[in-house]
Image (tube, rainbow, N blue to C red; front, top):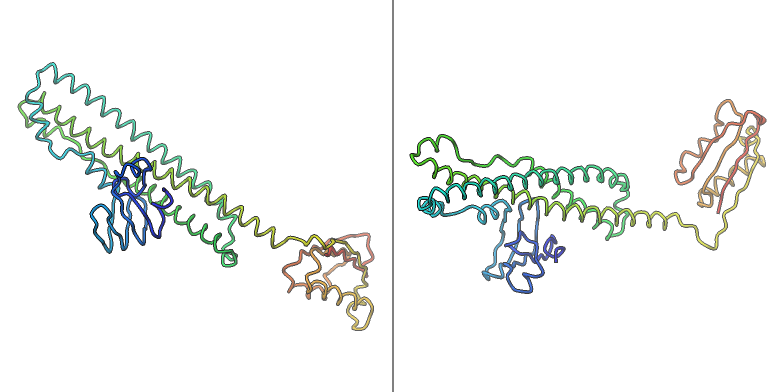
Amino acid sequence: MWIWSHSPLFCLSDDDNFATIDVGKFKEKKCHLRISLINIMLGDSILYLITFDIKKKKLYFSIVINLGNMITENHIDASPKKFKRHVKKLAYKDLAIEKEKLCYLIEIENQRIGSSVDKINMYATIILTVLPLALAVIELKAITTFPFLLILGIVLMLYSLVNICAYVFKAIRVQGIRKSTLKDLCKRTKKDREILVQYKYDWEQLRCKAQLFVSYVLNLQEWVTLTIFLIVCISIGITLQDISKNKIPTNVMVRSEVITLNIADVEEAHNQDAVKWKELLLEIEKEKCKHIVFVGNYDKVPEFFNELDKYDDVKIDFLQDSHMNKEQIKIIMEEY
């Protein structure tokens, strides 16, 4: 259900739970469902295009849902006057009890905010660690040659990373909350009762911020889990593709051959060593050679070596042997 509710195409989501569908609530039919042709998530905001609200039975071209607005609506008391009337009726003993309780609740919300910030920083560190590893595995030039499922996995991984970055940046940019002021308290005659109202106001603001940060953490956890899963799958897919490309057929033997050539004779058109050199180039063009090692005691690289520059698919090594005849060169070929 999570995958369906976060799918960019043909998405079924729950407006009351910021897209994510809870299976229990879904079975009990307590979800505010909508089905959308296109679903674009960007951190704490969701854009639905060509979407049908199943609960209201209305079709919309576009709808934007913001996580912060949802939490504010659910956690801020819309009728503070009711609490003020309640405070006026309290005895002094009850004032002290409720004041102590509100102080306790404020401390709890501060702890929730601190814990959430620590987890957000942890997830940011995980991504900064994993991302370079993912980029090291993926060769940008080779992406176009990948199969469709592998390309889709890379696109979804980038989509997940964008959402993770959006949540982290949003958490960093969250502004301070509104709080009661000493100036407002000084204006009141019954300060012992007014301070209780202010504590209630501060607690609601802190609760709203704490719930917002907790929501960030829960959503980050889901996106980080998805990203790591996709990175693992992509790495396995690329590895299997490389193995299939470099796989040697089971009916083909790998053998090594050593050829000795006189450097001067290679440059003579009809010499036997020149024929051997041309045969070697032909073997390379037919992709029968996988590894070639040139061993010699030459002061400068022979000119006919320039013919090897156009062969990028064969591993070629050059070794110096001071005990060899300077007029000769040995070629060790590992071929199929």
